[in-house]
Length: 331
Ligand code: AHG
Ligand code: MN
Ligand code: MN
Image 1 (tube, rainbow, N blue to C red):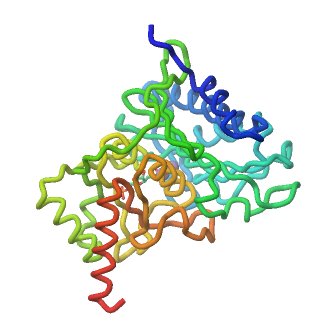
Image 2: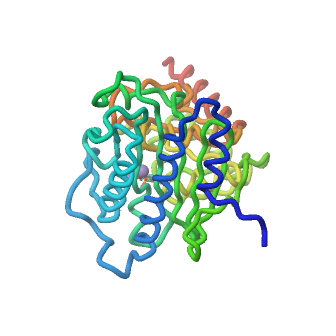
Image 3: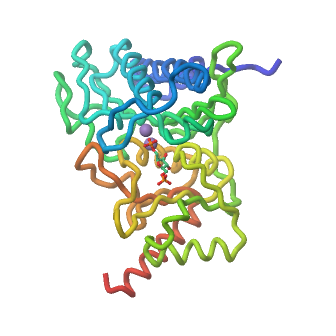
C-alpha cells in the first residue's frame, strides 16, 4: 500500500515551517477539516432526507437560502467555536460577523462561504465550502469589523472543500497548494494532489455566456478570441468547482462586471480572496480586470468584485483588452 499521509498528519508536519507556530492555526485547519467531513456526509444524503430545497429565508445579499446553506453555516460555526482558536467568524450567509465570546482573545478570525454553488445542490452537481483565515488586527478582546476587512494579501491560510464525485480539501498557508481526497471508508482526507501547479496548457474558458451582451468590449473581444482559437468552454456554475478545474487543467474562469452590475456577483471576502491566494500559490493570477484581487481594499463584508482568475497568460490578455477598450471609450 502507498504511504498514506492524512490531512492531520500533513498539517502537523507543516507546522514546523513556521518557527514560532503555537499550533493554533493547525488546530483551526483541523476543525475546518472536521466540519467539512460532516458537511460532506450531509451533502451526500441530499435527495434522501428532507434536506434539499429552500430554507425559506434570504441571506445577507438577498439571495434565497437553501437548507444545506444553513446547515453548513451552523456546522462550521459550531466546529470553530469548539476549538477556541478563533475569536470571530464572518459568513456569506450572515448579515454581520459573529463574535465568539468564549475565545474572544484568540489570534485568528475565519471568513467563509459555507456552501458555494447552492443552486446546484438540488441537481447533484458539485458544490463546495470556501474559507480564509486571517490574524486579527485589533487588540485582545472582542473582535472588530477591521479584523475582517483586511486585504487578501493578509490571509494566513485559505482553501476550499469540493463536494464532487469525491470530496476534496485543497488549501494553502502561502507555501504552495496541496489537495487531499476524502477516503470515506476511513473518514480521513488523504494527500492525493501534492504541490498543485497550474499546467502550461491554457485552452479552457469559463464564464456565464448568457451575459455576453452586457460585458464590456474588452471582455467580449477576449471571449471572441477564445472561440476563434478553438478553446473549450466549460461552466459549472459553482465557482469553487470551476476554479478547481482551472487549478488542475489550466484556463481562465471569469465573472466580469456587467452593465447592470458593474462589480459582478462574486464576493471579495468569501469567494474571491481565498481562491485568488490559492491560484497565485499554484502559479496563476487573479485580477478584477485591472488590479490584483488580493490587493483590493475591503470596505464592507459583502462587497462584490469582478474577477478574472487562472493561467497568467490568459488573465494578462483579458486585462490588456479591458485596458485598451477603456482607452478607446475615453475612460
Ligand atoms: P453561492 O451559491 O455561494 O451564492 O455562489 C454562487 C455563485 C458562484 O458559485 C457561481 O460561480 C455563480 O454564483 C454562478 O452565477 P450565475 O448563475 O450568475 O452564473
Ligand atoms: Mn458562493
Ligand atoms: Mn454560498
